Image (tube, rainbow, N blue to C red; front, side, top):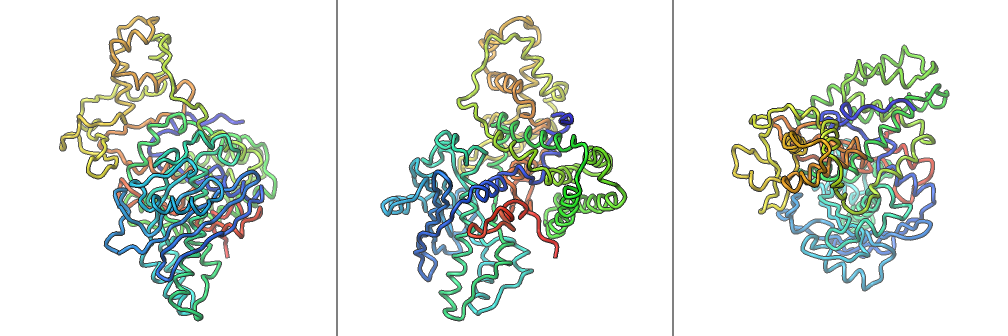
Length: 554
């Protein structure tokens, strides 16, 4: 295997904010597994009236156990439709049920799931979620199908989804099962598989619901949505600052995600020669990826600039591929080195994802190791000598130790939780009275402060003695010890600086989910699409279970 890229290279926010989906993305891991294992999908209940109110149950049966999406459809007044986490009503609400629900389960859940945060579920629920319609597109499709015609393809492409989720909660939220309950199941070992399955089944329900509403309006004249059009539609997702602290609060998990991707990249770079089928697949996916890039639009200035650069990178790569012979020795190492000199970070990471595609046999097994199986919280080793802990801090945050943390531009922001909105917020430290409510989400600054206070202590003194006098540094020293096992667990950028772009953290996490159409609406929240192009459950086969993320070239 080639040498993995250094954390100093990979873990900057600018590069993390340039990551793309790849073979190890959680949605693609799930669809591959379900196809490989021959999962069977059934719509058990669809009890929804002409106004679009009722419930439905969709079951995914795997080799050993079943999972069921219970969907509740609501008639939501337009003035109540909101994507905010503090909303109290939605067009549809869902839970992923562990097994096949009985009538009494559905009755109990119908009294709680539509309430979301105000309700409670049991450990039989693995996730709880909600979604709102894209009203303009929903009305357009219902109206067209009701009249016996297909909707305009361009209108569908402009939005890309009929409903967007505003939260998919799991891991104990609202009374749902803790992660530990399902972590040992083979189909749940990769991260977020319950949530990804919930969204996958939600997409099926949404298509059924829009066709049902069209039949209710148009009667015998109504037609179903053309499968080719339906296939391009995904599930939207609206995500804000609440996702950003996740990466900072889970350094071991972040390390496992990045390590798996970097190991995959290094494995492919070390391939001595590429076969003709592997080269053909790579070139085909470059062309198919070009379609995705052409269809990827944003109205936000930051993303507009990144897209313009990515399109330049695409043109530069296509020109280069016309002149390079990928049959030469170590073709992917050569291509990677060329990209480091010729492409932007966005282009480099896009190319890295594409290079992985022909080598599923070498890298797909890495997906099973992306979860954090360490279980209980990390216990500080109080016997570790001061010399060792200072070395770990230098290794993980050396770049931050000489920074002037009193300078306003280096500590301009502060993370806190809004009491009114119950959401993570990023405020201006010197303009708002928020400092006393600050969350510990500035690991670089805290590492520098701890390192300063460690100076003067005897190198062989145990850190337990240090912490007895400086308990405020417990969280930093815990992170330093985690770093010894997780070198890719720390972001090598300032998370409270004036130039911070929180969407870089959102982009990093969402890329591992496998989303497309990353579309920031500000530097703090984003809309994306999930499962666009994927086969619907009843159409899933080994032949279409993986590369659906790349549109076909007509």
